Image (cartoon, rainbow, N blue to C red; front, side, top):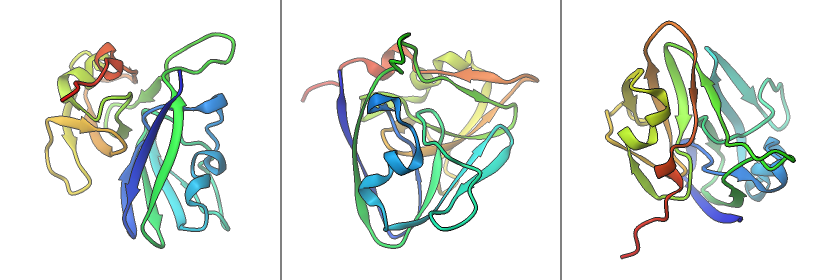
Length: 175
């Protein structure tokens, strides 16, 4: 089942995440950000303890935008990213989007179709091995919102797999 989502982007820096696996499993930056092509000049992500960057006309150590990670995107003008995707990769064997987080700071994103989810539900697969969750302004938060990226401090001495929880894909409440 394919779901639609949108992410509002302001001029200058935004901290975002994509909540779903891109349709046809195509997570290339050119595919995921095609709807805002020409309106951004850099995408940065902090993954596995190092910064990765993509610039449309410059160096690139970042090539994909996948659910679970957070991304700083520098917009040259305001825009809205409209996209769609699925809960899992469907490359013959259906599997959820899992990312590896290092013991330290990580840029993460909210998985799933819910607009907002409690921190404890969203981070359930980390088994409590985290200390701090911050928004783009450095404020401590208690819930994760769709399309938004966050800084998460992971505790312990080994990498942890961050994956969607059942609550991430539960049907949103209808009001």
